[in-house]
Image (cartoon, rainbow, N blue to C red; front, side):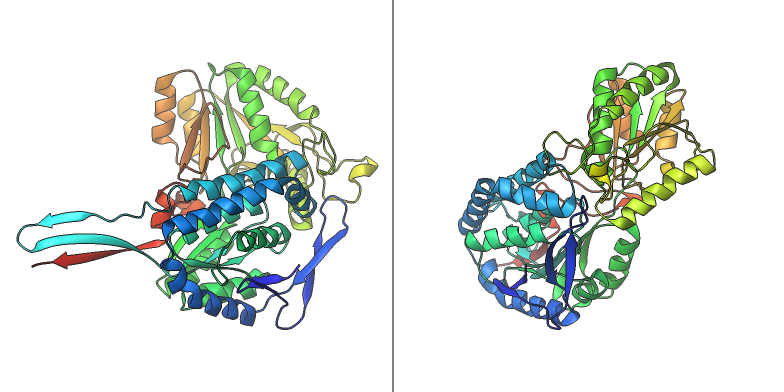
Length: 476
């Protein structure tokens, strides 16, 4: 695989490469160029030269390119899913779902292509005022390894349909699917230079993009520490910034909840993608009166999860994506045992079967009666470990749910509308689900509060992140 700049495959300026490893087997999949600051700067120049032509392209033509790209993506969904599973680790069914999500997002923005309208404002004493929305110019997007295809669509959809050009830096662990999808967009008719993909280290390629005076907007998804660094660098250039920095999403289970549905929601919400999802269920607060029954059903469900190489059939959970995450999860679970921070009901170990011996596998783990100061409840745990805490009532559940620095998502499970309303009003989160968790449709604005980030992706609201509002005063 090679970087894509100006619609062409290119090697890195210094000729160096880095390996892409299958997290389930440890095998080499491919090698991609280790991009440099010079490569990133070239991509910015190319994107800059394409701005005027793309901004003046008719909305119907932009939409047609997106529609064709979505169509081609669906035709190649099976092959794309295999590639995504091999580099990311998720089960094949989840990979197919993500590729379908990429196509869905492109199609959604097809429908918004001609909707960038301004306003007419009567100003009797001064004539008339109009507002128009204009593209920013060159934008940059830095995306993570957990959902590379879907988050790529979240970035390129509003950026390109608004008339901007974009330089995309994929995660170093998972660039292959991004490069392939960029090729599909080119095949669908996207002009050269409108979308450029530069692979390489974040501290080199990413920082060059953020510091470039020609880049007018940065959209970053990743960990909070890196996001804060992006914000610090961007503010010097007065750039627009969207930051999605993850979270520690709570799930509140009331005593009137449908337990079967709540258990199924916790299983899917926590162990989908091996727990490596920003809006995954990270903590469960369950009313004491139903806690034992809930935990018993949850344990049974977890024990039935099939762990293995996602490329095989009937696998529910694949490996963690990389050694760093694997070591982090092992460390956290070891702390639980050493510090007596709860009781491990099931899981907590690296699987012993030979099929999982070469990858970054970890058993889906349930920990109950976790104390409030535990890192399992305070940090973003990107992996298959689910802590459960008993609470007396909804007030206590909300207080505990709001006790972290994050505010991305939260869910409340109840049949009582008053409880649901109270949860929606008092939970600190950018998105709140009622009797569901994890789902985010392309039409729905998505983003967090507090240290979970700033700005919104998806929906019509995302377009405003990529546009400047210009006011025109007219007097005849």
